[in-house]
Length: 249
Ligand code: 13P
Image 1 (tube, rainbow, N blue to C red):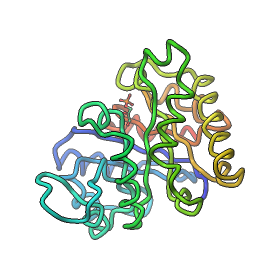
Image 2: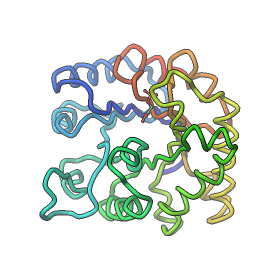
Image 3: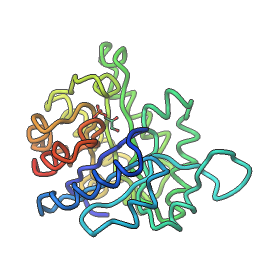
Image 4: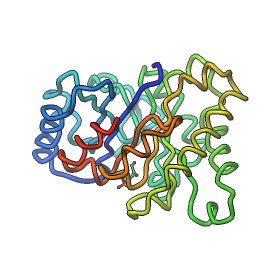
């Protein structure tokens, strides 16, 4: 996938199916007709309903998947199941998965492989905790997440990855990274990809910022040269605020 402006909404474990369908349809009806790719990642229970309603202007993503296609993994959903439903995108490596469900870099590398093998496009999350930021260790920390989770991929496979930089201290806290902090990290990640792959691969990858993106800060964040859009939590649960964010490109 070529580099694009992307507004992705991660609903996490929120909304009933009927609420979700209603928000999704409102976003689809009211979004501005710009060039942004808009993606909503609802809970698993909502995926079929959203796929059934969807028009071409809002895509649907899963928030996670397993690395096996089938088997004795109670409670898990496989990438093949997502593919068979017509899902094209999956979020992997969200900090909440890493922290609360002990998802390691090694596990994420397996999930990435399996998702790509099933033709899914992966939104791969990375981001440092507050203590790492305070010690100014964020670049090395996030670089290691990319190296361990992604850099075994070929350049061709990397074209099916979008990166979402989500500093943990900015998630759900109302404390957004400044646009300069976001730009600095995104530029660093792009240069790190250029070093390990090629300048073309670095230029072509979309890098999203996540962490308290709101209608009033989206324009400045998305205006940074290396920020290609956002992965939005809370503000994607209201169609008005999310459509305003989509209009910020
Ligand atoms: P908030 O926008 O609620 O801070 O969440 C960000 C996030 O975790 C998106 O994946």
